[in-house]
Length: 469
Ligand SMILES: Cc1ncc(COP(=O)(O)O)c(C=O)c1O
Image 1 (cartoon, helix red, strand yellow):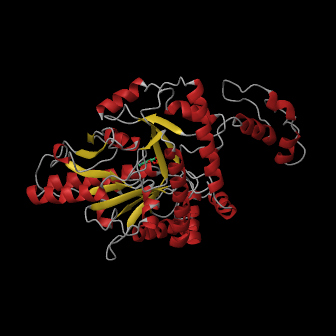
Image 2 (image 1 turned 45 degrees about the vertical axis):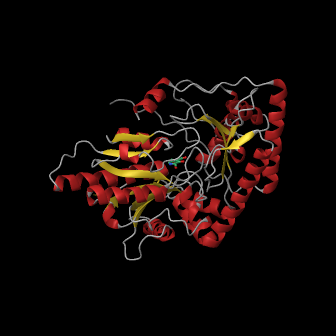
Image 3 (image 1 turned 180 degrees about the vertical axis):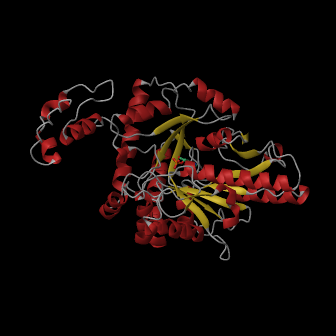
């Protein structure tokens, strides 16, 4: 008989107590190259994680991003409560799941979906996943229609502008759709109907137009594009739907410009996406895609699984995810309603207008987004400024903690640089004034001492992807 090894004596106290009794100086050890071998106290691990992020930017001062950086304590509590509920498990959390549909129904209403339609849509991780689902729906509908008509369905294309966010270039490549991207030109940074005749044809699955674009915050000329597609249909018999990428504009236009028709009021607009985590005022991790009617989202894209209990439908690219941002969106809709969102967006826009007027008054900057709707200030330096560029200003204000995006525009306007300030609701007038002071001070300094920033070089693979698209 083999001799049994004596078990280790049981540690005293609970696991938590034992962990807390471990020595504190372990957080002075270097971070190992390989997967950590040993246990460490919760406090030590927390101290390391916290301290490692100390020199990162302050998210509140990061005005290069559209993503929410403030919410009320009640919203934070809901976020914490929801974070361990797996949203992919509707059988266990049916009421949590219901909040998603309520939000979809409310968004369908907010975006003026027809009253007799069956609202359909989904919460997603962000607008990127939402755009992919919108694009896939249009690709499937086009393929089915082509098959039914016994026509070639091997060469789908999508038409959009050079101002699209990278997600659409990903969609086109990942899902094998030919990119038909209308280039920009200096002075015009949005998609209009001007060149559509060279891009649209019978293989076009949809035209994607943006409400609140990434580069300048402008809307594409959605109504003109819609009108052009109407004429195209009368001429050719080919009916092409539109998807609106309302990542930012989807939560601004309905509140600030209720009479402006950019949404489901336009018959060709069949799907809209928006980022809950941008002007939807939810912490990162939430997008929405909403279809004008249930039938726009092809049933073949829906899967039914029973791994987690009862049968559940799944039609997103991701499966498991936290319920937290969805519950916070539900909270924000209830808490603010149209009245609250309208008030917040009005204040935010007025701060953007204040910044824009103050910075352009001195003649140093030109406005790039004359047709601006969302609270974004997009500026380019006047030709008379020779000693420094937009990248110098961005670098200089960084010394005061501000993060402002400086970038060169997409083709064929790449010779134009932009300095962009995304004004979010947490900025009050006082902070807007401090920022304007710091930008002006940075320009005065650069005027005197000159700047030496060069636009960052595009990564080779990125250049290739821009060229390809
Ligand atoms: C117009 C537009 N579309 C899509 C996206 C992608 O959104 P998300 O970051 O929510 O995935 C962005 C992000 O900035 C955007 O501005």
